[in-house]
Image (cartoon, rainbow over all chains, first blue to last red):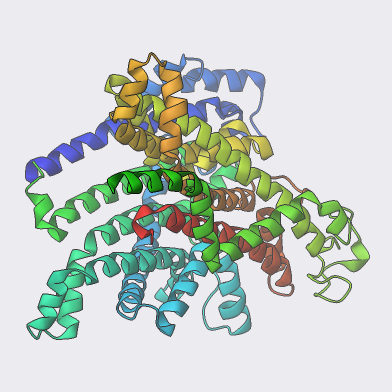
Length: 310
Length: 297
C-alpha cells in the first residue's frame, strides 16, 4: 500500500510538469509585452522597456524561458512577480488560497452530506413521492449555472430578506451563500450517483440475507448496502472537487471573496499573467492531490482493491 | 415431419422483419417522457435560434434610453435592460450563440478527441502512451480554468471560445473512443476484415467506430449542455462574447450592477441558460437509458 502511494505521488511530478508546460506555453503565446505592462503608464519609454525586457530575460528563446520558469519554481518556489502589486505571485497565492480551500471544503462537506442522504432515501423509497421530487430537484440542480444561482440567492437572502451578507469573507455567515452556490450542483450529482449505486446493491442477495437474519433496517442500509455502494460515490466526489474548484472561480468574484478564484478573474481582466499562471498551477495541483486521495480511499472502501495495490 | 417444420420456418423467415437497432433505440427513447420533454425543449431552442429575427418582438441591439430598466410588462414581457433594450428579444437572439457554441465546440471535441482516441486505442504502444499522458495533463486542469487560459492566449471572441471549449472537452472523447476501440479491436469481425485485406482506415471508420457509437452519443448530448454553460461562464467573466452582441452569460454579467433594483435583468438570461442545459441533461439521460442494453426489456 505504501509503495502504491509513493508511486502515485511520484507520478504527480510528470503530470505537474506537463501542466506547467501547457500553462507556460499558453501564457507565452498570449499577446501583450510583460515588460510594457509591468512599467505601466508612467515609465513607458522605449529604452526602459528594452532594458527591462533584457533584465527579465524576455528576449531569450522559449525553451530557455521555460527552463528558467521551472527552475525558479522548483528551487525557490518562485512563480514570478504580480504586475499589479509587485508582490511575488507565491505570496499572493499564499494569502488567497486558504480562503478558497475553506470555501471548497465547506462546499464539499455540504454536497456530500446532502447528496448522500438524499440519494439513500431516494433509493430506499424508490418511485415514492420523495424519490420523484428529490430526483426532479437533482436534475434542476445539475442544470443550474452556479453564477446565476449565486445571484438569485443574493437577491433573495441578502437584498430582500437581509438575512445573510452579500459580500466579504470575515465570518461563517459570509460563507453560507457561496458554499451553497458551489455545493448545490455537486450535491445533485452525488445524490443521483448515490441513488443508482444503492439501487444496484439493494437488489443483491446478501441484503436479503441481512434482513432475514433480523438485522435492523438502518444497519442493513448503512452497513451492508452503503458500504458496498461507496466506490462510485467516492469517484463522483473526487471528480466534483475539480468542478467545485472551478466553480469557486466564478462564485468568489460574485460574492467578493478574497480567494484564488477572484484573484485570477481580476488578473485576467488586468492582463496580469503571472498570477493567472500561478493560480492555474496551484488549482491543478490541488485537484491532482485530491484525485490521489480518492484513489487511496478506494482501498479503505473496498478491501478487495487493497490487495491489488502493489 | 422435420421436413415440414423446416419448410414452415423457411417460409416464415421473409415475413419476420427484424427491427433495426436505430428504430429500437428510438422507440425506447420515445417511451421515456422526460427525454421527450427534453427533446421538445431542444427543438424550441433551435427554432428560436434559426428564426430569431421573426420571433423577437424588438431589435436586440438598438438602444432606447427612455425605456431603461423597465420591469416586466405587457409590452416587454421580460422587461428592459440598462440601455432600454428588450430582454426577451436579447434572450431569443442569445440562443443563436449558445446553440452554435454548443454544437461547434462539441463537434471540435468529438472529431479531435475521437480521432486521437481512435489512433491511441488502435495502434497502442508508445503512441497510445504519449496521447493519453497528454490527455491526463489536460484533465488535471479543471475545464473552466483551461478554457480561461486558452481564451486569454487566443483572445476573446466567438471563434476562439469555441476552440477553447472544444479543446478542454476533448480528453473525455479521447478516453471513450480509446476504450471502445480497445474492446472492439480484437474481435473476430475485425480480424476477418483485416484478413480480407482492408486498410486500417477502412477498419476504423467502417467497423470500429459504428460499434463504439453508443457511449459517444451519450457523451455528446451531455457535453453540449456543458459547452453552453462554459460559453456563458466565459462571457460572464468578460472573456467570451463582447457587448453589444446578445449572449446570456454577458447579459447576466451586466445585470449584476443593477441587481438591487432590477433583478429581472439577471433572472431571465439565467433561466434561459438553465433551460438549455436542462434540455440537454434530459436528452442525455434518456439516450443513456435507451442505449443501455442492460435495461432492454
